[in-house]
Length: 262
Figure 1 (cartoon, rainbow, N blue to C red):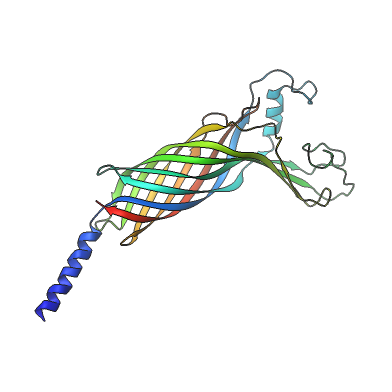
Figure 2 (figure 1 turned 90 degrees about the vertical axis):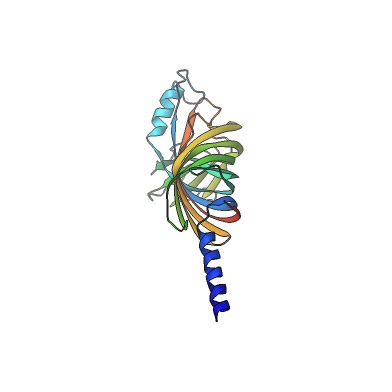
């Protein structure tokens, strides 16, 4: 009987000692729904071709009234490393789709629409209310590097909470505008993908991020985390005369495999 009791105590102590350890190294994946927008504009005062005598600044100001948010997503693979009692490194590689949306509400017959959509004008004679959502998309291979600062942890190390911040290096994979037609069609199509947008993307850019991170030790080798982030691109991601500085609010939902305990 004593031997069984000693075995049980040993198992319990082993589990307790394991629960009292910090994660030294881990690797995992996450997906992130995002709400995206952008600060757009121009400081070019010369006339823009195809817009009469309007300058790039005037065009940007007039377009800005129709801008709104768009829903997007990202996904990443991560490597985490505990630097010391307070700080940990979180580095990754993945995909991010940011940008903004512009709404052309209730265009009428013969009104101009984006070139590349049919003949570039509304030819529908019906009185139905129409709408076009132009989604400007910058799709990146992203390499984020973040540092997490320990705020609080439970006594059994099951829950750990961090403040987080860092930068992301972004390499352009594709830039396009997707136009979604609502309540009408052109050439029997409701969706058009257009490469020539006037906001052509730069090959390389960076973004900054701040947020929070909560980790839950699900089992011996598995950890779950949730990480709300706000990010902004401080420099224009467009190489045209029209500037675009995207921003986003998103949440990483992730799972990690624990490689080593501290």
